Length: 476
Picture 1 (cartoon, rainbow, N blue to C red):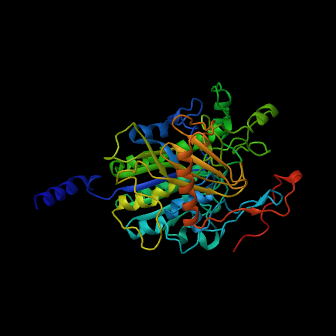
Picture 2 (cartoon, one colour):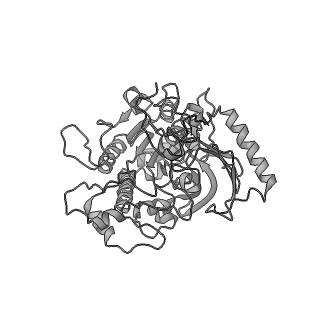
Picture 3 (tube, rainbow, N blue to C red):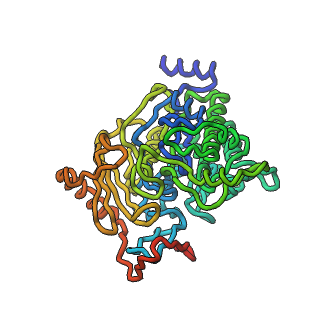
């Protein structure tokens, strides 16, 4: 009774309960194609992210966080479902691409949208009593498969607008997507500050085509390049646009007096893309065009060093991503965590924070990493059976060991990530016991999730390998 009386007095004088006494708000910010090595918090010496640095200084930085796939759609599906994306039929981005003359014919996504029967994290959080909002990039289907149809109560009024310039309302002045997303997020936070809310913010940056505001580009063009890094001025400006979104959201949360009761998570859907398409960067505002030399230099987008690989393959550069979590009362500022976590973990974690229950029916592959101890040694898996910036493959990581299986020639690569973060030395022949253990684990998992596999291509043409054809129609 005394405890209840003290709580009533606290509410009377402060207007709201403390973090420990009420369910926290959750804000999830998802970058697009941002690499693990792109942020100063992870050692980058060219890009500038004062707000993400501030977020890391107030929370925890994860060094072994992974996307469930090396491209956007499957990873986003894993966040929405808490399942490995192959379980619900996603192996590639929407709509994917066809390479008709490669050595194998690769499987395609079962659908080109997130099926309505999949129970999303938005639906689960709504069921738990949270107000739900989704602003920004979705990339899990259109028409009747948008966020508003998947458990999110407040969404973009002009959904699907261009990343380079979009507006909050029809007929309004065009704004950069990062500004629109920030405006919508701030309004959502202010409107729902007195009740628990779950806000999902999907950034369009830093996905190609690379472009940014000219003033920021000019700033980075005049900045000395960092050794061992591409130091792309437009890309750096795009990263600063993301950082501005983070800063505006953090400031709004503080302004509304709910910072101590709000959990903020920053993540990326896959690793960085090394080289852009053969098009010049596009700028939002009119200014003097970049020189030919600048344009050519800016085609080299980023490097994921010391990680090997990039978006579209299963080396660390394609799947290891930044993860920063501010969780008041859980982790002290400046905490570094080396635990292996995966995007499949967000769904059960958010439900755990909300004090809800996981829906009955789905097989949740993820675990609660926020309210429960993080498992120290569990296997995490990937299935990416398509051609992109590599060959079709599957992979498993257990502890320090990572095994990659080539699904074209059935060869294997084994790496000790503690000694060889850059995956330069394949030690499969030197560690037969580890290879046997991981290969059995991987094969059993592939069977358990009914993973579709590539098949031999009767039209294989060595001279035409790499030729890309977009799917002419969407799979129903």
